[in-house]
Length: 139
Image 1 (cartoon, rainbow, N blue to C red):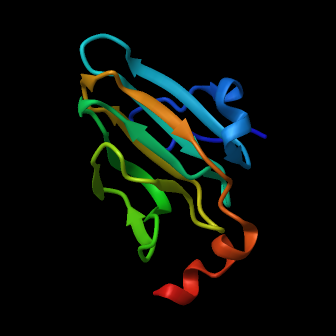
Image 2 (tube, one colour; image 1 turned 60 degrees about the vertical axis):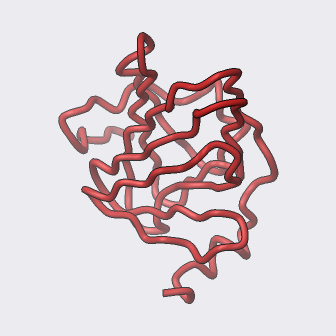
């Protein structure tokens, strides 16, 4: 399937190294691996990552900057938030969350790793189809 670029940031290749942490197909283009790590992550419609936590002893966390499409962000125990181009999400270290595309839209965001001490991602369970299929009812 040929896909046109969604933003000024190229989508990159299939995200094979992290595929086991996603439902559906995602793509990854690392924009920076020095100073601050920034990846351009693209999700096919319906694709989402598993619940996960950015752990750190000090500082850390993640910032998402949405560049194209429509998607979702949800923190554990909270209502999901609809995301569109221009949305910015600040995720503190230690917060269990997930993010991904809407059912009928491609979705792209820059994922910025906030520098910290002893940062490590903890991958958790997948977002179930039932949880995901009921997101539109939350609006």
